[in-house]
Image 1 (tube, rainbow, N blue to C red):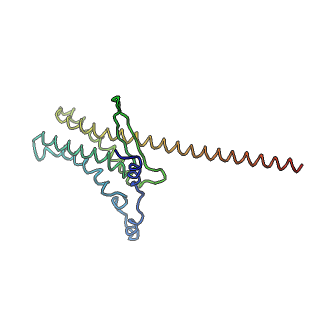
Image 2: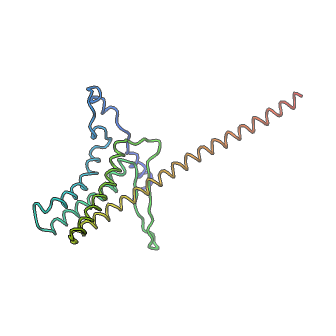
Length: 219
């Protein structure tokens, strides 16, 4: 397992938007594309690639084959690839967040969260598209599940169940990780403010005592 320093180095890869890459487009008067605005365009592509592929195979697979087993296997493969990519790569690079589970000796499972340094701003395009993809995909699978029930295609619910399980694992993990990060940043900010106030109060007290002594010696 990677050390804390290694994980922090990995999370530090979440970079703000590169201004230099936009200069040619802005000078030409054009609107830069989403990929050019992204700090990690390849990662952004893969953040959507596998989940879109799974949805397309599920929806259009019967146009090419009647073999349910083949469609099931292809969908599950895409969903597993998507789960791993989002959990281990795109979350770290696009929003500076990472979550994982650790099994203790007593058999219990602990959720662990890591987040980027708050002094490093996020690329707004990367952040917006990450969260959009994270929440929209399971919503699509919920719709597919409802359609399966209404049309009595209960066999296809197997694919939907796998999709919802893997997608919601990342949704819950990153939602909790984001909440944990905000709490840590708020606590750190409050501690700094209290530390500054305490230091200010101490200096004020020393200055007040000094002035009182000077006034006493003069009068």
